[in-house]
Image 1 (cartoon, rainbow, N blue to C red):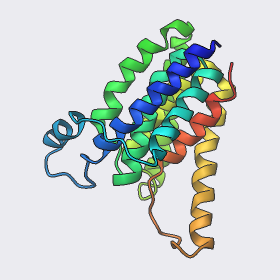
Image 2 (cartoon, rainbow, N blue to C red):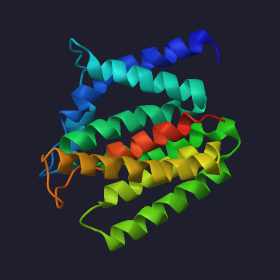
Image 3 (cartoon, helix red, strand yellow):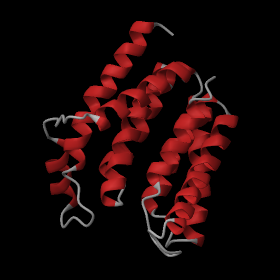
Image 4 (cartoon, rainbow, N blue to C red):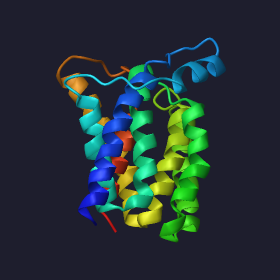
Length: 211
């Protein structure tokens, strides 16, 4: 992997982080009008702050994904960063971000030659999370089910080992966070928290396994 390509990937993440900060501020936990919310949130100028923690985190994520998985996975890294920040802020995974990402992700994965496997992996993980949502609707939302499809696509394109790692990783990380909340008395057994960021962290770990 060329150093210039990695540097450009990190720069893309750095610039994207400022936009994500501004865009995420436009989403609400319970919007009265989702269309108006989307127009307000998506058309915003980036906001860069000092210290630039979000920008630096986005740069590291993009660099790691491109280094370990390849350039076709950069789009997934970018949309994953946006979804993680919005979900952590609002406990929502808006359809305006998730649904258009499906065809765009399929297009960016074309160079891998594994689009068929990616689609199968996306369907399988979405079905798995759909079952979990049906069994535990209080712990998962439909937004998590839709996000699972994207994660399944991206990781299955690399291989089924990565798919399994992402599927298990999100659950393990979410469980560890729940245990931490209990241990530090910051939450109880019924405390709700956004699960999407942990699913995406699991996916990041899986992508870092590489080809």
